[in-house]
Length: 536
Ligand code: DGJ
Image (cartoon, rainbow, N blue to C red; front, side):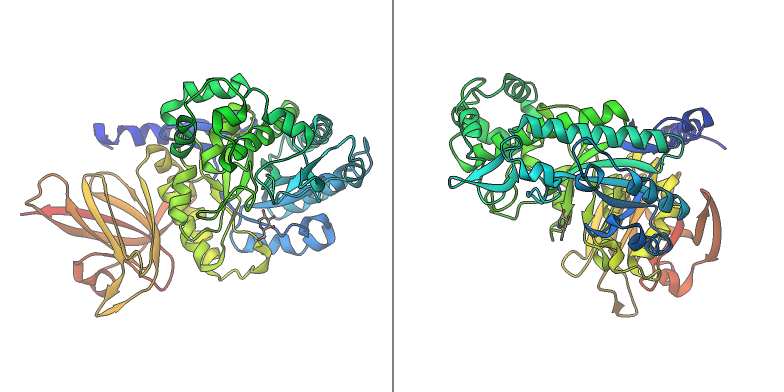
């Protein structure tokens, strides 16, 4: 094979890929690794793309309930299940741990050849504290609550040092247990710490402790972080800090303003401090990737109507200033403007992962954008057990992506994968790759068009591309040699079997609109390879 300079980076990545697969490295725990232009999850020495779903909150509290579900989830192409695990069940009495549910869930997952991301439902879930054990809930003196309008509410205050200590102790015990039972199998690939934290109903905690802290000095760790990262701060955070004089010392009200926006930053710092602390204790026991998720704010909504302090994109910097134990900040991405939220999270080195998203047809399409365009670590619709039809659109997307995963991971690192979702409102996208300008549009032939198309395209050597998805067509024009035309040499459908291309039909005629464009049929999911040539 002749390797031209242009193809050297991808060739090196392929070599690197075979190197990381060595048995010696298979022994290392799941971890995140910067590879080329992105950060990937490495499991058993190889990049691992999470094709997942999150269970309903209560499903995994019962092994009986879960037993029939695992094979169904595997049957729809999931390689991972986001599995809730609550503090109340792990430590029902203070200091007494019960890991029988953990062991049972791991055994069931392994039997179904599934990986697991455990979701540590502890001090907070959707802002509230319903999953804390009763011995925590009842002892409001030792484990203080958020105060609103002069009254304690059922939200543990992140100011509570004893709460952080107790949560961290249980979490560390859980992580040591996981290490003990899973360090060889790596069934657990990542951990979510808490769920959608933040104060609901007000922009901040108004307890005496919180009021005292609010009118005290902002910790210098935060102000020095803002100063050191000024140019890369989220624009609205920077604007708010600068509008208040870009001060490097002062009370919270002086530095960020006595406003809901200032309150949100104050809460973000305190939740972050608490959770970075819990995470650090867990990592000291077993160091695998750990993240927090976010209840996304609505447009123009105020902190408190969504959990104030949650790692919304504009306070991720505050979370980072509070500690380095957390590996990533993840959106629960149900919003219509999916692409925009992906971009808000996939920035300044934060890899994109969404533990909750819409499933069904929308999820089947969005997963291509997330993994293809934004180098996502994975995708995971919520309430995954509600539709386990192995013939669903989501299952078809997952199956196709599973065969493509090793190749896609290489192209994510090389930074030359493109993903897209097309519909009537967004009927086309344009991008450049591999020396060509690509116009990708909803497919149509003989006057019949499709309403929805999605997929991804990767450069595949000089004048060659690989694509997967359905319902789109691509026209190519050269970036240089603008006066020359581009012809389609060949189009083959096929499959990747263990990373090796096995061609099927040669597509031409109607399947290729008589050579007018690269059509990827809307009726079913396809992977295809195209080769191009130029003429005058
Ligand atoms: C988001 C939460 O994180 C989930 O636990 C669940 O409550 C869903 N919302 C319900 O839509």
